[in-house]
Image 1: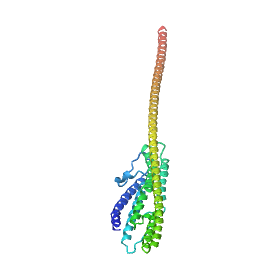
Image 2: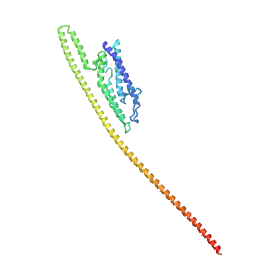
Image 3: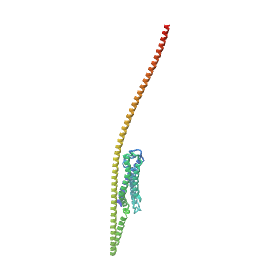
Image 4: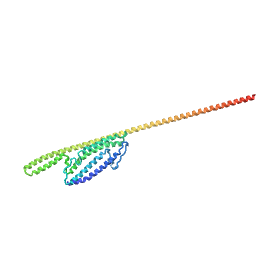
Length: 339
């Protein structure tokens, strides 16, 4: 018992530090999520504690909340173990879900699934020209939340629960009814052996009872072994699914990258065509303006020529009038001279 108390004493600060560390990562993740702006493509987000930015891969915060909540419950359970060990009236048993609670596993899995749904919904908030960084944020939210939930619940919670229940007065078997049968069988075997010291008949009877209990324990152990094999098979199946999901994710990213490259090339070609068309329109506009200017200059020259001709006609009329007047005067003078 002292060894268990010493082990629990060592584990309390360890899991408390892990809970604080995960809690800071979760708070930093929440601060980053509050800055999320789908109208600012390819924006880089930073939290108040930039050291923890590397953990902010999930905009649903499930990836950081699940370890934070789990480590916190484990630290609280270790403190409860130490308090129970130092109590005058220690509680001999613990809940089979200790240090967690009845609906802990479904709640964690549902948080991961909610993160997946939210990651897919996030894509709809971005404009049509969503960038690669924004798409990766959405896919990370969709995949990392479920990945962390599955790994935590189906890989870490089971052994942690067994260790915690073993530390709590050795009641690690409470979570497993077959293990409880083993403990009960050992108790019955001890009672049968004690009664066997009375007489030969009682000893034979106790031996028979012990043999039956051993058979029951063997059956229980085989059942426990089968359950452990099924659990490991289920874990392997989950890991295979996660590997397939990761491969599908990578394939999706590669396909999207190729699509983005093709779209960028098409956009560049279209931009070059637009620039050429714009240049042609500018050249045509300049030609039209030059022709209009030349036409205006020619019209002005025609107007000037017409004005010059009109002035010459006026000068000729004036000269003719003066000439006619001079002729009249000459006739008058000639007439006077003749008379």
